[in-house]
Image (tube, rainbow, N blue to C red):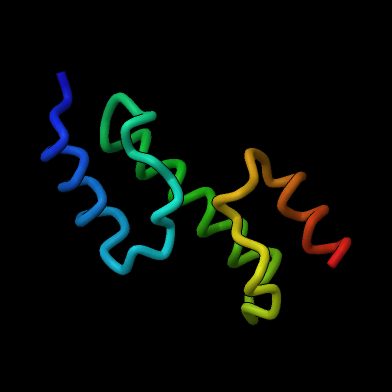
Length: 75
């Protein structure tokens, strides 16, 4: 069983700046799954908002790249 301390370690290792703190590590079975989700959100941000113009649109609030891209396009 994954302990709370393990999940806290995942956050420290995978997101030390706390940029993606909205993503709850308790939803994942292991650190690799959690890291994968963070990496996806980072890639979405880099691809669709590289200049960080849409600061009010957080990729953590979207379940798919299509939803995130639509939100940016509708902004």
